[in-house]
Length: 222
Length: 222
DNA sequence: ACTATCCCTTACCGGATGGTAAGGAACCGG
DNA sequence: CCGGTTCCTTACCATCCGGTAAGGGATAGT
Image 1: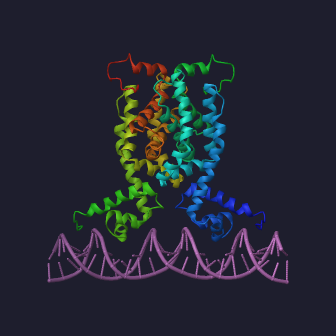
Image 2: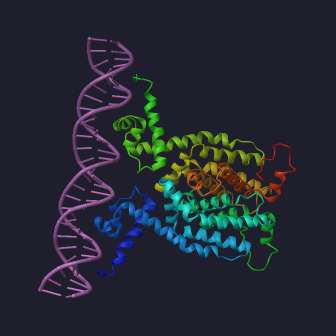
Image 3: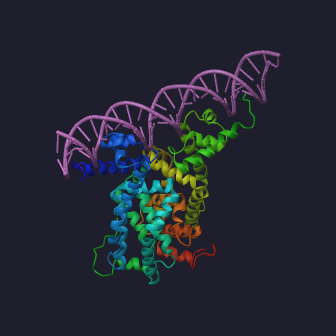
């Protein structure tokens, strides 16, 4: 029925990609439809042919990110069951998700600043289960003595998520302040903070040395 | 010489306050001169009488924040010299500065997103000394055994600063995800993360119990 | 060959935006 | 009483914004 020309999904998806990049870099209000059209190489009404309004485009861009997120979410949650490995896989997945494409973090941050009410509702619906699951894991580890006794499960998880987001979003700024700024040094410290503020000293010491022979010691020790 | 009417600094400063609030809430591009003029209760050319352009107003707003920061900075750095007290006073001052007026955090975050290059230069010039001083304190504590042996001084300080900023800026969003969201619970966990990822287990235990009788135990233990 | 549909173009529009021109009201030193 | 300065107004402007109208060229079904 549609007169496909192999450009059917082409211009539309290119528009979505360009809009994502531009919204992340300059913000929604700071980006004009002309900017997006120029980036794709078409005219302004062409992008409005696929997205009825700029506002709808914003929603499409945000949906694209959340969809990607919800697709990697299950994989993230059924990670290894061992206490320490589970932490590493979940935290690693989180870091990878945002540092792989900092635009995701920037966009999320902008949404939190520009439309907090909307993001609230959105997170309330789609991130609560995830938060609850991870928080439950933290709580179990705490009751089992593996985690700090005074850790606040939900607050801890939220803080760590925020930390990953802002580290990814502002990497270009902070790298200018760190003098000998290797990015992985920055990321390594991020992981260290998350670990050492979660695991009890006993669990940390155990993982560092006399535990199972499963993983080679990847602890930083320069 | 000037025909003062007691409104000399009035409208100007009110404009600055309104602009700060609006820029923080809606962003620079999302705020019109008309919005600002309406908030102050004057006409659009009136605000342009004090600030020759919208761009100059942005600079004035940012300068206002950095000036406030630079004014409280020295007080922050000459804080108590005892290891644990120094941490508490510096970290507490940081938290207080941003949570007292979340607009500061939001504005800083927006600047990092909208104009990373400019903020880079600005931070490079005015925040490097502060970072260096605190990092040096962290390093000294590490070499003295009070801090974790594998802490990365500069990266740690940067991460903590970012964490405080985003926690203040996004409090309205995250509070919707935390179910029984007392704000101070959120802040308490923030301080716990900062402490337990910095101090070595021995130093933490000492501070919690058998140390000097200086402070009453304020550790959370619900 | 005819029609319909899809994709995209040129041309245009109402409204809002940042900024300017010009002048008026209040106050000043003289 | 008289310029002069400061502060703020009304009126206005060029530009750009998101969005629409209308149509052309290509393709597909019939």
